[in-house]
Length: 348
Image (tube, rainbow, N blue to C red):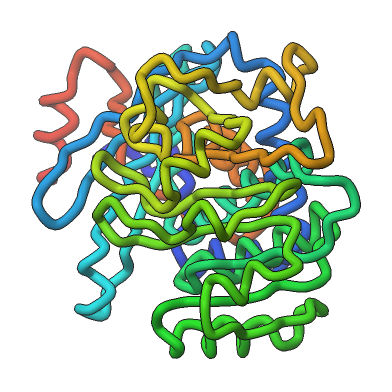
C-alpha cells in the first residue's frame, strides 16, 4: 500500500473550519482582507482567463461552474441558485471551490464556499461602493434581508464607513432576523415597513432578492439623484430587480459584460447600451462617479475572478493553522506509470 506520506494530500476547509477561521481572524477583518485581495486581482485583470460562467438552467433554478486562471493558479467554483429552496428549509445558494497549480494540475485547496461566497460577495459590493458611492455616505437601505444581508451590512460598515442600515423585506420575519443578528454590530438598524420607507435618507441602496422572475423591487420614482445602487440579487436570465427606467438614468458599472448582459439588470437594455467595467475604474483607466447628482449602479452578478481571489486568500490564511484537514483525493503512485500496481498492492 502506498504510504500516506507519499500521497498528494489536499487541504480541505469544511464549513466548521471556515467558521473557525473567520472567528480567528475576525469577521470584519476578513471582509476588509477579501476586498483588498479582489481589488489587487482586478488591477491585473488582463492576465486572467475570462469566460461567462457555465450554467445549467432548470425550471426551479440554476447550477453553475465559474472557472478562471491567472496562468499560475487555476480556480473554479460550483454554485447553485434555487429560490424555491427557502420554502423547503434549504439554502437558496450553496457552493464549493477548488484551487489548483497550473504547472502540475494538482489541486492545492478544496473548500466550502457557501459562507465564503457570502463573504466575498459582500466584500465585492463594498469595494465597488468605495469607488462609486457619493462621498461621506453613511446610510444604506438593505432591500432583501435573507442569507446575505448581514454580510452586506457589515462589509459596508467596515469598508465604506456606513453607520446606519435601513432594512426591508417582504417577509417581516427576515427583517426581524437581520435586525437581531446586527444588534451588537455597532450599526444603527432601522426596520422599515416598505422599500420606499427604507430608501428615505439612504445614499446607498442595496437590493438582494431571490425571486426568479422579472421583478420590480425599485420603481423609477423611488430613486432620487445622487445615490449609488448596488444590485446583487440572485441574477440569471429572466431575473431583474430594477425598473428599466432606473437603468436609463444611471451610469452603469459591471464586472464582465458578456456575463452581465445575459444575467444582470442590463439584460433589459439594448445589447449595445454603454457600460463601464469596474476593473477599469479601479485601475484609473475609466472614471467612476463624476457628479454628486449622478446615479451610479453596480450591476453585480459575481464573477470567477472574485472567487479566485477568495480561494487564494483562504489558502494563504490556513497555512500554519488547524483550520483545514488533509484530504486523500489524488491517486499519486510512486511510479506514475503504475496506477494499476498501486491499486493491486493496496489489497495486501
